[in-house]
Length: 421
Image (tube, rainbow, N blue to C red; front, top):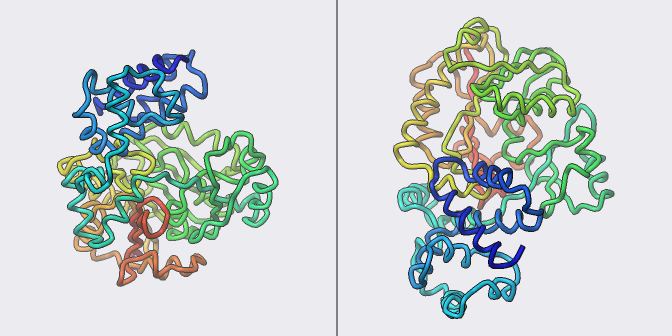
């Protein structure tokens, strides 16, 4: 594709994404489906440009004010990846002059918001939590996320899978926290990786892997993944159960549950039972009340711990949506708790960085449910062979708290309880 046409296509796609009526990755995927003539290199350039603008929106919008013409074209120019000469061949003389001036703007002339590229309400909320660590956190949220794999212990051991990944020509190392993880360098095509095709490994962020270790399901137990989504944690739980017992995967989206089926086939699991529910009070949930040994609630949340992967979320979420989510999280957690038998374990988790969705929800649940005894996350992680458990938890060890700038994972929170006899 000619540079000018590619730049125009980028500008058009940025405009679509910036309506913020759907997730950015869904908008981009739909655009590609509707424009099948785009080749792999064009798709990569378009995607990289869009997500660069989402990551550094405030900086690019500030720089764009000094230019002329379409705002979306100016943003596309500022975020466009690749060779300078390739891009310049698509620009007018006026655009070349403007762009050269933008490139030369020193960091010292940027205001704080142009460096951290976060909406002010979110920046303030994060500053209140991490203090002097805010700049490091903000910088980490602008960077790329790692590509982590979880070894399927039904089929393979980590050291063997790691060696196989290396033999396939990929650079990889063990994840520092999860005893089940492998971290890859770059963005390799996993479809061509033999250990992935055989189900010996699955894509799963290291932080998400730790949730299964917190729940620690055993052979023969009755277990529920209450908000299963596409099934990443479900697969980890099923492997931990050694493909025994019964594992329910609940979700309100039948479409998301359908995505589990090919992954189940690859994994070798037969103890998983996907169940589409209408809401957290569905009759199918009531029929299982008091029968579960373990329940994981990885609740719907703002997703603000995943900004390295989904930078559009910082522009789509607001204090109001966060408050609404916190109310939903409390309802879901209370409903899921009814499934547990005496002595059963409940784990609540989010991929949010905000205390309104994390500590506040856990504390509200504890006050409303005195029949549940808190379990220190530090003890559960230590029992799961996590070597540096204390460093992954709150100062008192009560909650698991993962931060991108400290732990190299997505942002995660988790709390655990045991139902009293």
